[in-house]
Image (tube, rainbow, N blue to C red):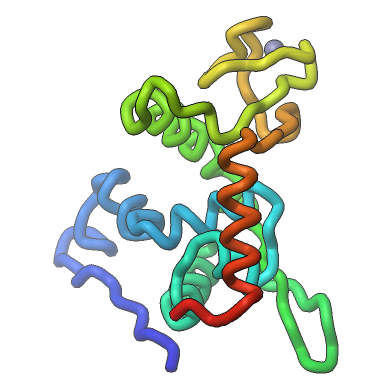
Length: 176
Ligand SMILES: [Zn+2]
């Protein structure tokens, strides 16, 4: 039931076939589901069902991705219930270190992938100065670097509605 770990074939010269860091990173985070799972973990979602509802992955897809992410060192499982045994998913140090990339994806997506009338999905407050830091990577108000621990997130109205609707649809019946 668990997807086999697929690794790029090894080359005689390097352990992972290439020294290129982009190719290696792509091998770890380069698919839709992995990035969406990371998004959920950064937003504070840790449980399988909620990650599934928000990513809209099938249980099989999500299980495969979570296993791979754990094997790659991005996330770790922590038990939150004994009977039945259930786990939450949390970012490791390596996973947390993806945050600047996540912020960059957000900035690029807000800038290039949305129509002018669409609102920003997540509004941040930069806690050191108390202002909207903009798209970063540094705060447009005070110039400080946007660090995760210094950002307080508020979902834009439409994005909040979208996420609540996904959760409601998920709870009212299996979608796939
Ligand atoms: Zn600031």
